[in-house]
Length: 300
Length: 304
Image (cartoon, rainbow over all chains, first blue to last red; front, side, top):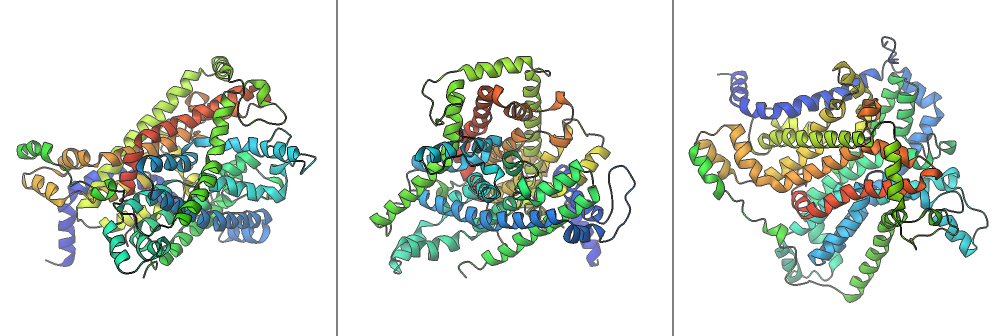
């Protein structure tokens, strides 16, 4: 019996397993794997939903990088968002989870709710409109005028100096999601015998404890949460559109995703938009893979 | 088979002590000043995170004149329910009956969540417990798909859904939800801790894989059910349908709510009430399922 036969036998023997997985994976390939392949393929065409797509080579990509200034701005904004909110939200998730880990279960449950609630409350980030509303009725403007720091209200979402910082704050507020929960759970599963052994071995304070015991034993959660936080940090779009509009003033808050939506669903240049989607895909996956490699070195 | 069924009641997983025993018996190396600093830090951010949520609650009960007061108010002075009655009136006047939006949301979140739970856990069991060709490839593709968002696939998905002839039907939103990767991932990781002996003994009795999944695996992963349910519920509850649901009579509640929210000054009161309702549903859900979700998340880590 050669190798091929054994493989085929094993596949036949596992048919019950494949049958169980079939519903999920048929849908998964239809709605996730195939679309990625199609996006890459379409990015080399001039598809516009009306005419038959034609192969145009790298034209969409050269157009994006050489002729489309808005894309370059959107790319810069996206990287800015990702570089600030990705690591910062990852850090916040961990630090908060770590602090509340020592608390009694009820207090811990309360703080978990407080920090996690924004990420599950749907479109409630709209409420930030009332903090940074451009007229005197905005809470921040009202407060600053009251203090006498400014005379006229600041139009926060129309002033390019404020658009990015405010969106970053809102994004951070939204970002304590699944990764945060993974940390809370992970911290509780760290073997407490390790801490006791550490105390015997001369660990003096909680910072050393964190570095030498907690972090290395949480590596799997660190990897998982990193994926969650990085992926979201590249996908910022809804808060931009709802709070600052589309496009934002001088494109100061536009991101790759909002630009993609603009090209695709407003202008119907699907081939061109697919090139943007492909770049977004490479950015997200590339960053994730790179960070995974880095995090695997923690504690080694 | 009969033995497997008889055994079922006795099949209890070993207690997950690590999760339950979070309180340490002895606190190690804690300085008072360090604890105080951490508390101040936590308190500061706690206020920051909860402020918008508190404002949402507060505005929902503010009478109209307080909503437009200068200087703006954070807390209501004369609480009223008039915003909710305003909302009720708007709902009755709307072109599509409001109950229709509500029904759409129930159909989409209900079927989407149920289908996701079944499909994802059926696929998770073999991946967690059995050995077969292509197992690792399949799972690593799922992990890879955690690394990008649906924005990447939106345009081709629109084409695929149109080609399948399900554009502008509930299925356009429900079917893709069935195969969301996060649910499969979390479920598979959680199932790995089921002892092999449970599954082996059923297999020796001649149970089929489907039977093992249904009668042995599923009853033992109830915390993970809840986690998948709430994560998917949240996602589908927040969807507006976008390009996939164009007909007004198919749009979900979130869409109707966002229309009211855009209604401007005239609808400021109803708008405030809407925001409270949108926010309250998923938060309430989470409050009751928190401990189960944390239990599931304990196994969420990525191994090499």
